[in-house]
Image (cartoon, rainbow, N blue to C red; front, side):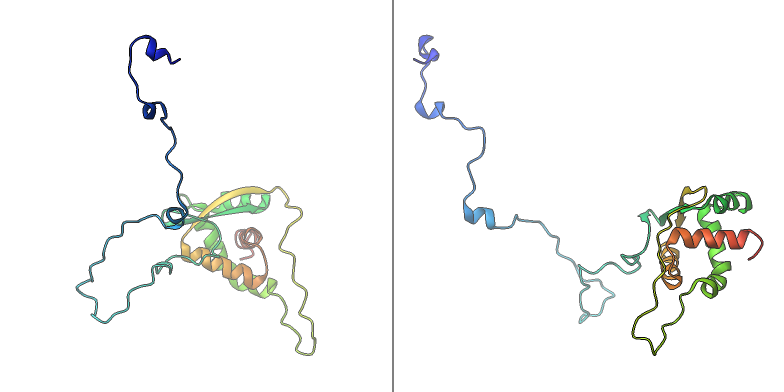
Length: 188
C-alpha cells in the first residue's frame, strides 16, 4: 500500500516511474558527431578572388617550430636550463644592470658561437667508413653546483639555440653553460 493513498492523494502509475537519467542513446545517435556552430568567413576585400584559402590545420605563420625548446608564454619562450654553478655565478655577476638572464645568455651565445662550433662540432664522417662516427652523449651525469634557471627568449632565438645545440651535439643547458663560461670568464 502506498502511503499517499492514506492521506487521500490520487496518483497515476506513470507518475510513479520517474527516471533521473536521460534515456539511453540509440546506436545511430551515438555515432553521429555533435553539431558545431561555425561562422562563415567573409572574403577579405584586399585578397584576390582566385586566392586559395589558408589551411586551417597548418600552424599560423610566425609560430615556432614544434621542436623549439621551452614553453611559450606571452611573447617569450622560456627555456628551463640547468646551469653549472660557475655559469650561474658568472651570469649573475657579469650581466649589465637591468639585463635579464635571457638577454645575458643570448649575448654569451652570440659572442661564443664561432668558438662553440670550432670546439664542439662533431667530426665529419669518413667517406671510406661504413659506420657513422659515434655520437656524444647529451646527458650530463654530474653538474658541479647545478642551478635551475628559467631564461626568457624570443621564439626565433629559441629556434636558433635549438639549431646550434643540434649542430654542436650538446643539450641546451650544457650549450648555454659552456657559452656563458667562455664569454663571461674573459676568454670570449
